[in-house]
Length: 117
Image 1: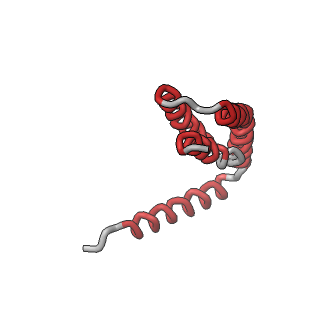
Image 2 (image 1 turned 60 degrees about the vertical axis):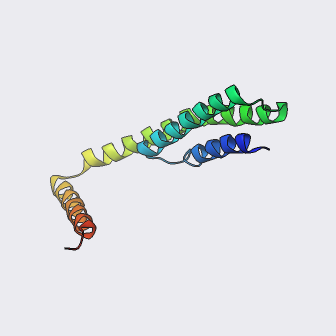
Image 3 (image 1 turned 90 degrees about the vertical axis):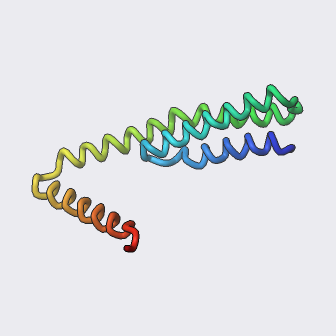
């Protein structure tokens, strides 16, 4: 496989690595990676002729990516819904504790990023 086809295949593999992630941002990154890869494929096809086996391999990978797309978003929406249900079922005390822990973690992370003076 030449470098153009390998680069496109690598881009599709990168996107595929996020298929199982149950977080919305991961699915959005996966879609962005696919868009970048498809744009690169379009540019490559304008400049270079790929062999039939290369085109068949890329077509198969694109079909897999298309099928995985709906499953990935379904999975992440289920995870988001579960998180929402858990949030709404929490008592005010539990919510206060969770948000306080989050605020402490944010402050700690911010203090770790400060530049030395």
